[in-house]
Length: 444
Ligand code: PLP
Image 1 (cartoon, rainbow, N blue to C red):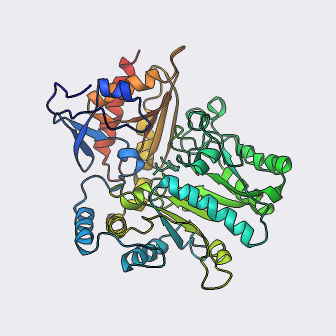
Image 2 (cartoon, rainbow, N blue to C red; image 1 turned 30 degrees about the horizontal axis):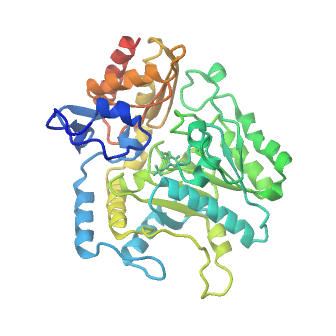
Image 3 (cartoon, rainbow, N blue to C red; image 1 turned 60 degrees about the vertical axis):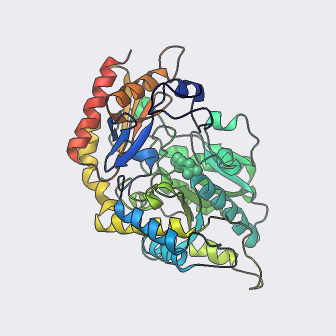
């Protein structure tokens, strides 16, 4: 492509874009230049309402001065320091602050925190901790992990193995894993408001996989309490409790991947509290730093952590970690983010807006091509019937149309996903629904 005719467009050839149809995008790019509050501004000066909190991560909205100032202060004070056999106070401070709001509730808090650089790293870290823990307690044959169809757990080899999205898997080799069936059932649960009624029995798949593989080969089961990336798939009522009970019965650890649901998305700090089910490990990233600086964190129960704090005290307990684990600048961004969440009540704000959000989204029922609408907390999905022979193209066209009209949505196949920043006001919810509704009416 070389240089562009539009002076606002940079040379596009060199950046090999992730999860993008590169050639299609570069032929008609969408370029964002700045962001403030609920809005992006593109390179041509058009405002775009952020209906997706970036990629489910900018929970406190864009351009937060407090985060910028904390990052600048930390960069000037100490840009980087290792956390291998060394430490710096700010990473410990951040872990202690996270421990105070850690998933699990009183008495069962998962308050031991392992820092990573992303959601994918958090997932691979949690899988490795689970396998290492099983070995440490004399269960070394437990190396298999159970995931779920349509699950998304990032793009590491561990994450794609337990994930259940075929395009992310088919090209690459995988670690030993098997999968529960997914819980999407439009026939029985279509247009449910909140959690679907049907499908609790799908949790029994874990029993089936135990019978197939032997409990002594299974280290853990990992699920997103609410699956986001596959197009917002909700757990049927009682499903997660059932999964916890079966996992306990067979000595299998339960991991919740809360990379999307963590930090207020459902109206509680973590989905763990929303569902009242306490797993052994929780993976997070995204909202941890409001998306401003890459960082992830795995929350572990004391049972898991202490189970690995064995052997001679001068020996490393877990041979795992990243150059950027507990990065001082990311920690500074994270602490500032937590302060904003707390001061503005953002970790529970979705609960206040959920009923209004639900009714607003469900007002789109009956528009052309809409075959299902799903919602929970400040998450929504509108599923469209695919065009014959061209799956995904209809939702993509709606995505482009919305963008041109000033709204950012996200599409996966023919599912439109919405997850606005938690600072959203009711009139902005109205704008989302009206721009999207008009685009749906225009969609061929
Ligand atoms: N796990 C879940 C549930 C996610 O939604 C994502 C990203 O969307 C990831 C893991 C991967 O996170 P990252 O892209 O930061 O590696």
